Length: 392
Ligand SMILES: Cc1ncc(COP(=O)(O)O)c(C=O)c1O
Image 1 (cartoon, helix red, strand yellow):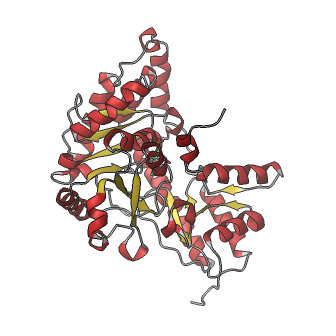
Image 2 (tube, rainbow, N blue to C red):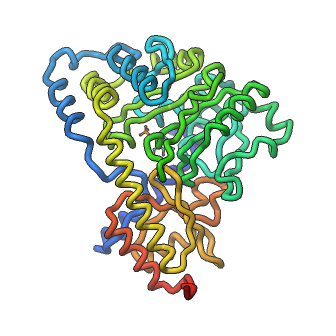
Image 3 (cartoon, rainbow, N blue to C red):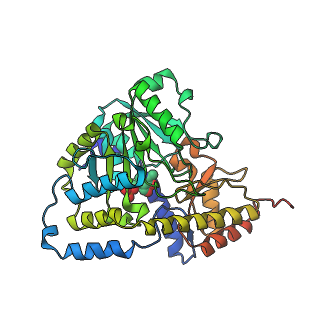
């Protein structure tokens, strides 16, 4: 039996190749410092796992969930947005419960575009956006994200043709992989741009809780008029270390939410109700655990930046997310440098070109190991003698 054309059209999983390389090195018994993936290293806070334990013993949770998620979680998502961002959300019409936001991001093009339609994707960007493009048979143009523009797209640089054909656009701040953070002014400009050009917006707020230097990342939905044209996707994977639980939600424009819900009515029967109950607990209860986590990542970021600069690697400090976006030394491509780090220093990083054309020249480092390991990683890099330390 042959795989369908659609299946053959799917892009190769960039992270799968990286996992294979790292596993091969580990199997050789090497002490690999894995900075390549985006898997949170801390446990889910106790009060959330306790909520799951209790809910899982209630036979009511053993039944099918309502197709569109339990009312308690939809309400919790709406209350969370009101409390954290002062955004009004109708829990019945403006929330879609997702089995992780990856699902929502992949199914959205299928729900609102037709084959041959076009969308705009950030470059560099989260590779799974391309899975949605392939499944829906749509085309895409890119929004280049460069250091000169603080990793924000420059709408004025887009051609009329590109603007005219785009029907949907993805944004992601705090940004994976660059660590860039959006400003409220940028989101206001986005609403204006999207309205002028009739483009729907989906803002991927996966790292919404992780902003540094006292700056809280704004929600796209705080921009006036944003709900007329867009949605935001919020995952519990990062803010609450619940990546394995597979739970998140989309909020915003009722029409787009309804489109996601319709497609999900056909694909899923929502998530395990006990997981949904625990997710509601995470959103409703005190957020001290989130602040502690944010502070942990900031402290790791500071160590990484300080240690890198000490060895002569002049890196820019990320403003948010749990990634740092590091320029590769002259003479290397991203892939060559990532391979060198793995082969000669037992350090795994994600090669920037895997995130798009504009990722070439960078590697992505996850702040997902403790400070001592980050320090050790930089000491191992120092031994490769790739950078010159300027005398002070
Ligand atoms: C930018 C971005 N968006 C979305 C996701 C998906 O998160 P989840 O499916 O766990 O909600 C990730 C996960 O790594 C991510 O980095």
